[in-house]
Image (cartoon, rainbow, N blue to C red; front, side):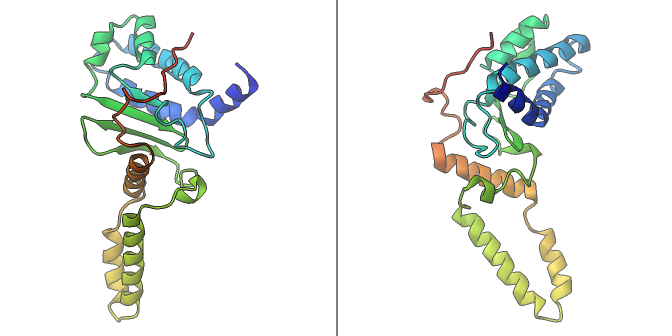
Length: 207
């Protein structure tokens, strides 16, 4: 492994751990624990090799499609199952339908069977619109402006302090806003996320 790969491995340690832990959580209580532990170790090794030359902390969305783990067709999962003595069909039967996992710098998320994108891990300071040079979608800008205007209006009234507390409780959480912005950015930058068959990117199988 070259110097860049070693540096990258250290940078993406948390994201890889979160992704692998999430994947193996479906296998525990369904398959032998010792073999599941072996599967997790092998999967972490394969994903480290796969992502090492496709990890861009300064541009987290770059290479996101390549780093997407499609559980039904991911070579790393197939290879890890074989190496840990698990039948691939047994492993796949533990996952929800069409489970896809995105492992990006500063964020790990998943989506299953057309359900909304869910964030597993997020590092707000690293994953920000400003740092990624991505303009906020109009809907988000309008929402933020509306919230700010409403807050300023209420703050000037005698009911301001009470109503502001209620209003803050109704705002989007950081994870909800992050997931929404990510969905819109992905949709605007490269079309539907499930259009993998038409992607020019090829999965790399670790040697």
